[in-house]
Image 1 (spheres, rainbow, N blue to C red):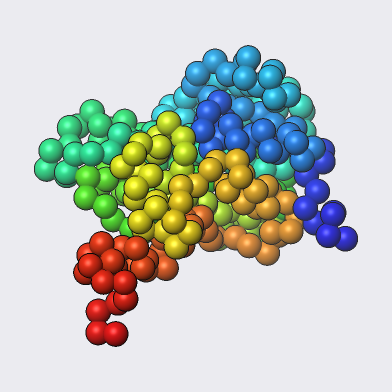
Image 2: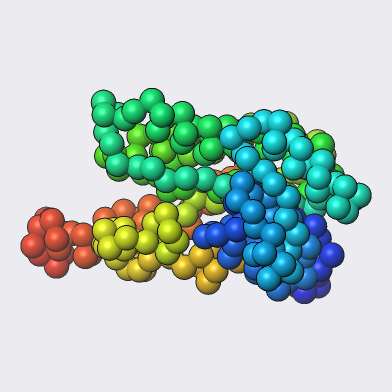
Length: 262
């Protein structure tokens, strides 16, 4: 019974941005668990897909026509509805305050991080079976504000809103729609010394997240039948960052090993 709940054998899973980072880790684990994976990416991921036993279709998530075509190209490969869609592609480009953010950066982040998911939610349902699962990669930046991440945070917060709306609209087909909200992860987008220090200081677990060991299993769970009553949720995969100030942070701020007033 338990095995069947978590069984991904024979499931077909489409994932944007699967050539690197979180997307690559998720794609690799899905294949290890028996799924058929389609990597949809703007870079030529043919060699990467072949390496892990996946398939590749071109997709520029910032372009609606390209997103729709990637679903059609996927249908041509398999001629069956998808079991899961993972809208994972995204960019960082954080740093400037709102008053210093250039228009080009605003458009880039919004088109890729926000519109990319919007286009996937718009066109994906026509290619997924009833009872399937759609997962968007959001971020803890959608819930915890850090100066210099305004445009990025806004785009990720928009993902959370769209996920809830799509969950309502697709519920009649038993399609689940959820978002995964990671903290800092050891990828090219979040692995600097400063970002690692943030993880070590702000998370209850006191460490950086690893894409395969700490995140991929969450996506696998949301693709499996074990999550068939979970929809419209934004899951914090943050090592406990959202719990509140850690003892280490309190000590840095106050110089004491216990909270003020104790």
